[in-house]
Length: 75
Image (tube, rainbow, N blue to C red):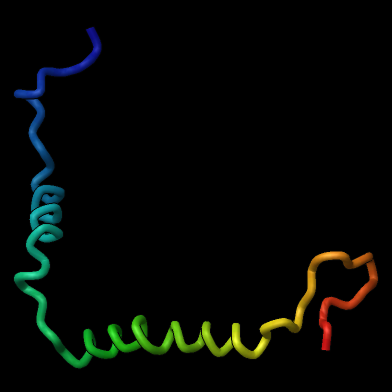
């Protein structure tokens, strides 16, 4: 039959090491200038850019009820 005995299959050592690293990552984390900068970018900079873009274009575009050739910008 197709298939193998699970006892004869050996896990890949690199995959097992990577899996263990993912589980214990919080134990080895350190705040460095690089990790602080990455954290700032993802927690503050990216959301503020999206908020600014959404705030400046709020109500400017109307996609419903337009015909071909009509402009999307309302103001």
